[in-house]
Every structure is written in structure tokens, then in C-alpha cells.
Amino acid sequence: MFCAPRRAPRSAASVHESFGPCTYSTSVVCAFMFAGSAGLLPVLGLTGGLHHPAAALAAYCALTAVVSAHAHLHAVPLIAAVCWLFYDGFVIHQQGELAWDGLADVHRMGLLISASLLGTATARLHRALRCRRA
Image (cartoon, rainbow, N blue to C red):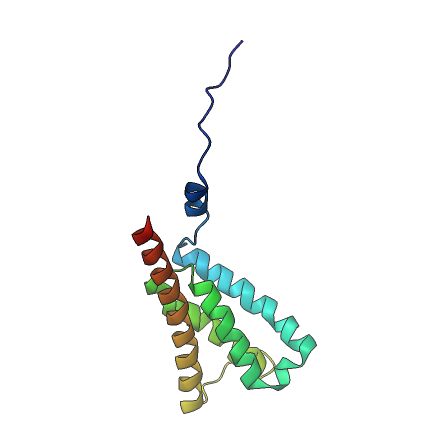
């Protein structure tokens, strides 16, 4: 009878390292952002956030920071752009119409890019500190 070789049990430190935050490809992160942005719309609709653009922008910034924590740095503009498309089309213009509102949209895009950079930088700092301890 064939018996598979037994593996030595893994230590708690090696288990923790294997479940740490990881980065995904840009296309996967953009798909997560698309699904998250689409999923956030009904939540905002149920809570009345569609009538308060500042609260909706804060929710989209939080979503952007969370998703970008698993992204490479070069994916930051794409993540912010996908989020801005949903925010502009369904929160600001309400019917899925995209329009450029000048300086206001520059500020909104700046906030989304800043949130994405914050999420990516926080994740990179966490990884660097974790690797330094090991």
C-alpha cells in the first residue's frame, strides 16, 4: 500500500506570512473595482447616499483605498478612473450619463487618486515592515 510522505507541521509565523496581503494583476484589480463600484450603488441607494454626493464620494474613496491595497502602483490611475465613472454617471448625473464638470471633477478625481495612492502605499509599507521583521 502506498503512503504519502508526511509533512512537518508549519509554524504559526509561516502560516501568517502565507495569508498576508498580496498584489493582483491590473486587470483583476480593475474587475474588482468594477464589481465593487457596481455593488456600492444599491447600498448608496438604500441608505440615501445618492442624494448626498459628499457621502457617496467618501464611500467611493474608502472602496478605492481598500481595493488598491491589493494593486500595483501603476494600476492607481485605472482604479480611480473606474471609480470616477460610476460616481459621475450614477451619483452626480443620476442616469448613467457621463459629463465633465470642469474643476469639480478635477477635485473628485484628485480625491480618488489620493485614496488609491494611500491604499497602495499603506499596503507596501505593511509588506516592507513585515519582511523586515522576518
